[in-house]
Image 1 (tube, rainbow, N blue to C red):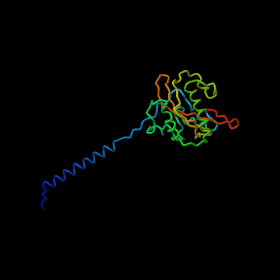
Image 2: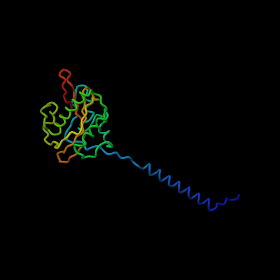
Image 3: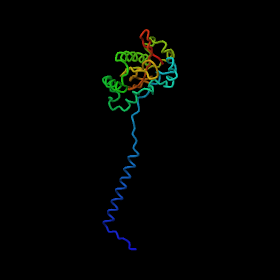
Image 4: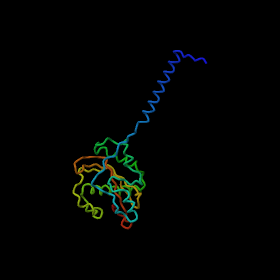
Length: 214
């Protein structure tokens, strides 16, 4: 059996092929090791709590399961915090009040409207008032039943500003839920914007008034 002799040209071609194969393998390994890192949402406000097991009859258990954090938006609903986390259409953090209209538009887009315009506007304004009372402690006497379990707390937020608010149907039961984005300095003095919160409401059909519910 006669061995086939390989000339210099064949060796060069083989060398080039091996080098190309190595580059492809390195490229595949590099691309497979890349991880997409999403920017985490704003730090959750610690003291205010807006969801507890005390809720409207028939939804108490589901409300308790939704969590007690003020920034936890019901998992059954489209999450504004998740939609806003990417930040592609949001102004940079700490842009100040001038950027709030942009935040409002982003929040409007994050959860599609499902209430009549007048109702959504009414409940959103009320949600802002309740949340300001929650975060600052001022005005809590308007809703004594809502703030019964939180009257003893003295460490509140300062420099509080609601950047955006929307009213939507409550996916956990009857009534409405207000999603908010807000800014403020915690008891330690650290100021942050882009915080998220929710306030839930039940409507009294006889009087037509909205009552905040935990």
